[in-house]
Image (tube, rainbow, N blue to C red; front, top):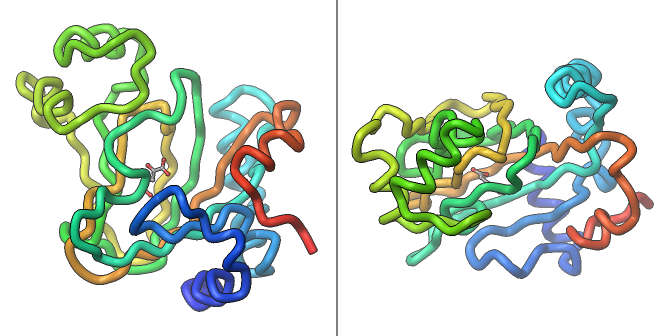
Amino acid sequence: MARDEVDRIIVEYPKYVNGNAKADQRVYGANNASQLIASFANDEVLASVASAYNREPTRTAFTLAARMPAMTGNQGSGEGWHRDAFLRQFKAIIYLSDVGPDNGPFQMIRDSHRRSHVLGDMKAAKLKYMQYRLDDQDIARILTSEPDRLITYTAPAGTLILVDTSTVHRGMPIKAGTRYALTNYYFPQNRIDQSMYEKFDVLPAA
Ligand SMILES: O=C(O)CCC(=O)C(=O)O
């Protein structure tokens, strides 16, 4: 089972368990330590969807394996509301555990990646130019007039979410249980290089 693979990798590769996030236990490059996870990383259908979205040849640079236990004061997966980029950033997230409202579901502000909304949201929440991180008050301001833009992805284990993380998003703080997920990070092939692997401290292939 993929969830057992996540547990195994966290035990076997402590050096690569990312220490930046407090509650979140993350290993970037889990696809290099598990054939099962590699099969998700290298899925051809997903790569073709990512390539179509980016309009250029695109593939998984690495897969993040993440285990998120409920801990007091946690900020959720990704450490609060943010966008990864202002340009397209395609990711495929698969839940490996059932994710209800208390289990840290992925949340997103609909259309927040669209140029038209980037400016409107900046105004509504008084954001700075190119501000990547938002607090709860910023989000409340954006949602005041359009509350239905908040999407919360509660879903059973096995659910696949295809998302552009240049939208404003987060994993909701987790209150109960342990959330398991894999995330493929897609990039245009010609942008994948050693510096990217160093930036994320990616577990190298054996
Ligand atoms: O896993 C999630 O629900 C969100 C993760 C996230 O925001 C991130 O890694 O940038």
